[in-house]
Image 1 (cartoon, rainbow, N blue to C red):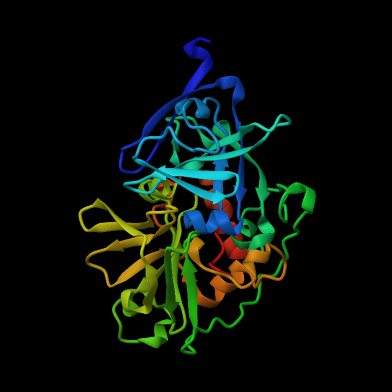
Image 2 (image 1 turned 120 degrees about the vertical axis):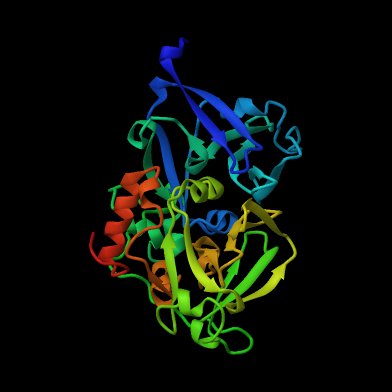
Length: 358
């Protein structure tokens, strides 16, 4: 195949330890892509939903990596078993997710790979626009959000599946979910947060719990709510690995660490720290030394009933409406790699009353 018949994708992590060129046939474009809002994907990444695609040639990067023994990868990669048949591969230094793999048994009882996929936020394609690069054709596990979560803000007309296709379609309600009381053992109103492996767990207190604490003046527009925003800068997108980095800004003294045994800190620039779980690679949040607050990844927020992956959940959008106040302008919106997604999110948020109309 000639160079005129192919284009080159670059799969890379934020710190630069990993960079893999992938030659992709032009005939394969646009690639089929999907989102997933399941409990696992949110808590293993920190994203409100993941955005992934299967890239031709991805499995050729590590020919010695085999199911069952899961060896053959460099030590600079984390391999985390997020499900019995799934493995997530991320950079050990910065935590950027790079590859998801799934395996199964064939009719002869042999284990084999059935899917290799990469996160869209970690793929760089030069001047190729998103509409030419990929097409998001389906939203998986929307039912796990209770009320559609942030997928409800993307009115792209795609099918929204409750779980997997054979288990039915999830019709997103026009109304966001109703939050339930979240009280800890001390009777305090909190948001509980955790990574997938539970090596990092913490609680977020309302601003009113410590009204004079650091960060409250800057990041608490109301006594009961923290500031939240989407950041479309290249750094946040690449580090998260997905297209919608979303965070709530919380005063440092309003974060109560329950467990931080696996917490790792990656200093991405002078004064800027990016925190992630060293075991499952979930992005916990970012912290600037000069600020009295931390930006916490929204995907780590626990919702009532989410393990059931169904309509009994209280709803992510409803919980965010109760706890957060959103900026009218996205951070670094001009750097969005997918302006279609950015604009759809703005329209959806305005429809749900999270911000004014575009």
